[in-house]
Image (cartoon, rainbow, N blue to C red; front, side, top):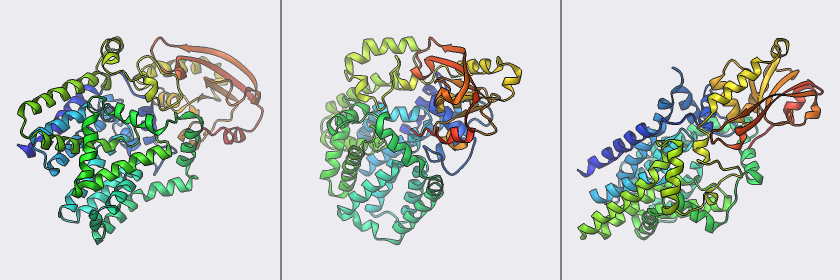
Length: 501
């Protein structure tokens, strides 16, 4: 039975996500990933290529929210399998495996990674899988598993750069313990070379374009991102993994550090969190590590409660109750009204952590949370922009382009209104340039005639976009404005308008 539980856990997680994920609408970032993937290249300003390419592939036959979110659902299932497989490696029985599955499903950040397309979805599966293979090699498994580790690390690196910090933390953990012996083999070197080979195209792309990701991260540290101290950061880590279930992974960290053969994983967790604190990483950056310490905590609970059947039953019941409390707000399964009501009547009483404490950016917070809010209103926004564009006088429309203020707006137009010529100066859109636009006529969505209205001779408001939907302030009260009579060359204006953040 023990060896079946990882598969049962994976199928249960997959079924839950396939049923719960495809609701509301496309998320702002999902639209951006799709549009980026429709322009295949080795890298993008703010991300490696794997997730955009996967997102675009799901849309080749037409718009499909189900197919788009089936990819993170599969990754979540893979993460569940790796988590429970780790429990088995740690010596945990059926109780520990079931407990780890419930805690995995009860961690809001892990559910969120599996609920929508995003860079963290790949690590949700591959980080615990790398840990599993390292434990197996340390226990005498075929060292050729290093090739699998190298491949997994390379693919994870082509999905999100934060895996580098995880790998550095693992290396620190191995070097600090006798398990360093597994590093001194030709297979370890071969695995490292394979991983480096897989990420080399993206490194080359970043270098060829002046390392825009570094520029973007620096910009985030100077105004956009919320910077917190170590104590608040630790509170955030507890909150995003479920206030009531976090003691399990905390116990897992202690258990790993106290077990000589697994100590390198405990040290790796501590080093990773220290890296994030020092570099002011967002609270979810290291979150793909939590399946590892959840597995350890479940194995520890299995040891401690081995002789107490009633305590095991009570522990499973407790975990199931508090995991289920958060699922209705981590999967988009409730109507907007029901979600708000659930948060007021249930969640705010049981989970008294202010939303502001978990904020990662200095933005207005909409009623239903930015993730869900940004799944609303995009077709309507794109339709309003198209109507404004088509209402322009024919002679003006013939040379006009739409300027979107951010990548979400631009991606919504390119996805839902692909016939409307759209440009933006935000992130990857700036690097793609302005095409054939002369700047003679700009339909600007938000702002006041691009960077500075003095660059244009004339400006007039042609429409206002208002919505009753609880979307973020970016799109809730938007002025559509025509700007004509550009006074400087378009190339100069574009060069001065780069917005990496």
